[in-house]
Image 1 (cartoon, rainbow, N blue to C red):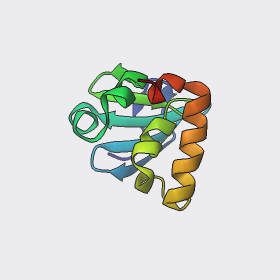
Image 2 (image 1 turned 180 degrees about the vertical axis):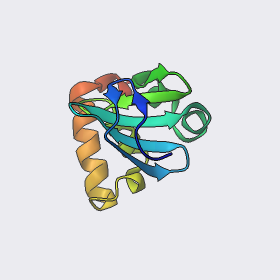
Image 3 (image 1 turned 90 degrees about the vertical axis):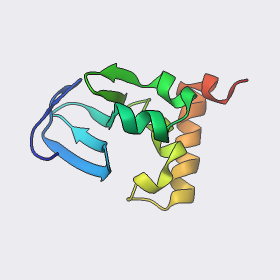
Length: 104
């Protein structure tokens, strides 16, 4: 999938495939990750799926607070920083915005 596509945040200006069925999208003002339903259900935990929002054939994780759960579970999908640092940054964000992820 490349080029412009509709997202929960508007029309994308940039789409980058991080993994099969996993897309980083940016609009003029916002963005996040779109993960195809089938991929999300096999590659993410139930707790991560609860953080994402169902949107058409995807689970959407907005960039401000939600997408860090994906990078916590799959730091290898964030190619801009080494995996250990990605996991630590993602954990810090999750503890702040979604503390229930680490709950019982």
